[in-house]
Image (tube, rainbow, N blue to C red; front, side):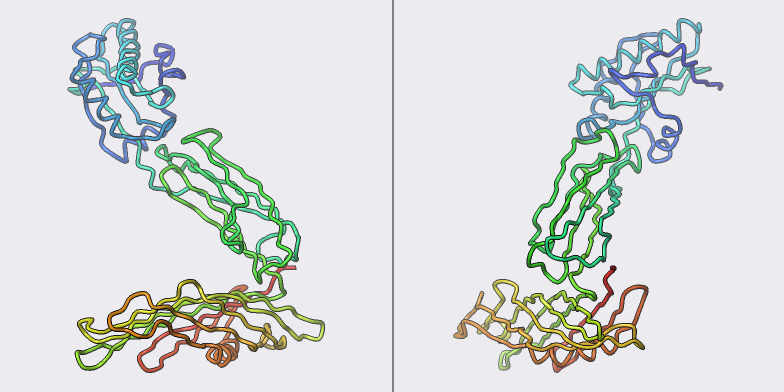
Length: 414
């Protein structure tokens, strides 16, 4: 059986701006490889009127796409049997017009959203006269590229401006829904929005660009942290975090601890969890001395009681508890980074009673300052370099409690 695409001149409706779109070269084949098309019979022999049953089935298939407004609905191919060349070309054109008019009459807005092809077959045809291929689902996140002046990792000072440029696209395939929003958030200011731009689905141009300026606070945190975010209309996201230290060296300290003792009817058990994170910076002086600050927070939860919950207490921090310390030390040329220690550590955890049975302790208080003071020098001593980052981990086991500390350290860019 021989089949061919009718000449473009014979099919002026192949390029449709008011009611449909021509299928771009090469994308139709890619669509066919992704899913089998749905088959329909829309016309009786040599008729241009859409069959009610076939038209209703096609309309239902298109509605199930549920594409956001302005986004592609899929690809429709209409087949016309071979006959007199002039008549069949005219028949194919009119069938295409009738189908699009029928769909509009069904309340389906196909303008600029439905890719339509008409094909004239040789022989007896494929046994149906139309194929519909839904677009692939939008399962790919957008891509986000960010640049900044100064660049990420650069040392900044109070009241300095950081200019950020965000460029996002969402066009990995025909099923992409387009960029919904681009945002810039100041994490170091409790998520304050610096910029936020919203867009309609599948809108042009495909590439969205947002520029924003952030001013470093007069009393900045150790690390200014800005997050750029691009989200599409299928709720997929891409993010990029920029860190701008306020000292010559900067890093993070993270920790996590869990403990568990199994309770019985006659002996008490316990469950505990404590997690935290802190940022720090070090200012290096001419003689190599360093001094700085560490600021962060931690949360915790503790349960104590007997099996069967005949008597128990559950305490929890109502909000993150502040952790802070002063840092001082000396840069060591042989190591390539400063050795430092903590002093004036503040790491008190207050937990309030949130659930209990026969419990008379309304609150608990624990002080972890000695733990931080003793732990930090050992972590600093074990720092190892990978690229531009020094990292160390210390695992801790004490009775029923297991946990770890992780320290990272980087040098700020000038």
